[in-house]
Image (cartoon, rainbow, N blue to C red):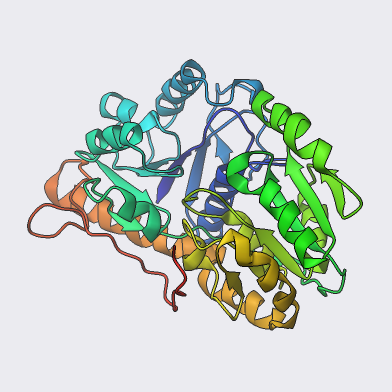
Length: 372
């Protein structure tokens, strides 16, 4: 297949630091190439992913993150450069709406963010001619009337992540500086547990800087070591030597990529059982999930969990190979349907006889209890 991938314009693929979606796009591109497919990548022109970059794209502009005009201009250029793709997988929000006017290939899109009423309106409109991928069963269940074709969990190159010893004597927090990610709760949990906390966090946007300066910075003390934003090598070393990764998220995160990064290093996860967390963490085996006010009692228990089992869970359920295989299977079915009908309409692939999309979860394995 000649697969077209569209990433957002603001961060290069792969990202230098923060950028979960861009990591996923990079992993998909590399996996497709390794499987013998041709990949055309419409992304920021300073991307270093080893795919064929669509010409005419602009350099990354992180200062414009989330700007509508920036994304719209980017997707116009993207679809103009993907005219010879067999199938297009668009990881932007606006792109699939542009696809109706710009391409003849089947289009797939992934819902990377939460399904809220405003975004649900967009995805319902796209669903007439676009296959929609959800990234967790929790995300898909939040808006049952949005016709999701398939649920595919994110994956990563687990084998490339070094396994840590977990003997650093500290817990770690990795994420963004914002209330939703639970950094404030992480500080209090670690203190109540009597365990040092090392914090690696993105802090670029004005609201992140303001929250840090007004809430987090005045709170930091001798129990915390604030490292700022770190690169992959330092992040994996930080996680790998931690006795636990502390993830007390305060919102229904669609998929916590950072959790599978931690499991890949062998480090168990301790966090709240909301969003995708129960689909990633096997409670009592690869971590502990519980209410925020109980996590200080669960955090010390994490040091007794089998780190090899954490690594195995990441390898078996959240590898690039599993993610790539699930996507290629979907693409093949979309192309087959398109060829049979003569129309690049992906909307009904995986639907039942009533016309409602089936939510499929090809990832095997048990899902722990503990959902709030």
